Length: 341
Image (cartoon, rainbow, N blue to C red; front, top):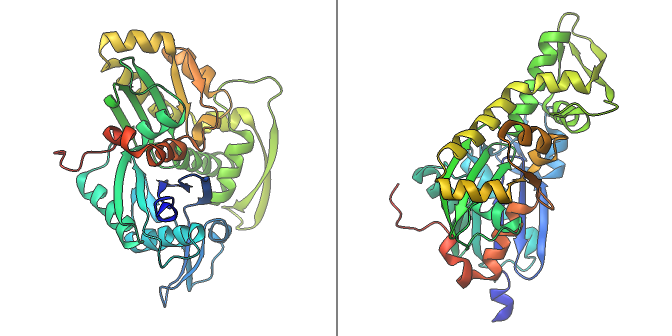
């Protein structure tokens, strides 16, 4: 019996990456949320890292796509196929595998979008699907004492959404979910290079630029890098040298949206909890927390202490995984089925 129960899993179904946590084993799958399909037959050709390599490089009959957009399911069938593939990666003997599943969703999600996530979970072979909101999972994964009557503030900057929430007594007191996050930063870099250098960049290159040069606070010894793209005037490949300061200018606008969301959430926080946050600080999780100087800048913008979670990329998956390990203890933090929207 234990072997069947041990198959319970938590899925952080992200716009950029999907992570699967298996009970008793930890995070076993951490792959990009990308699927490559044959347009004519609908057959799945590649998933994850393999499919991501194909982005922007496919012939006419193959399409590489991200089935999730802004944290919610944009292509239901592709999401279901991707989930099924990841479950099979974990459970080789899939005839017996009917796992109980906890799936993370953004906090601003609608009832219809929740239904789509649950349906995808059931279609991919789960016997029971529970939903947890991402900021709650991120807070648990970052080791915050969510059950105590003290205010904990978490800012989770993912690929499709930024989740800001104040948590106390095992529930979200106030939250804000905006669809400005990692991908918006990539797009801002693409737009800026188009405008300043008349250079067209692909999605993957823009992401690499963000990771190597991206910063939000002036740092000593700012790096430069050569970026390759297509010249919009001649149509030929061209290389330009871009500095970290220029990339910072490019991503300024979407960053402002993120800071505004943090301010708005703080503004709606009851004064008692705001006092707790002043003492304990704000915790940053998600891939966006890795942007150089983000903690400094947020400290400057809010006047609050800011800490980066220990492993920001896996916080949400680890938090959802904790719910799988201590299912009965953490059951109250899961989204209530009959909750009215």
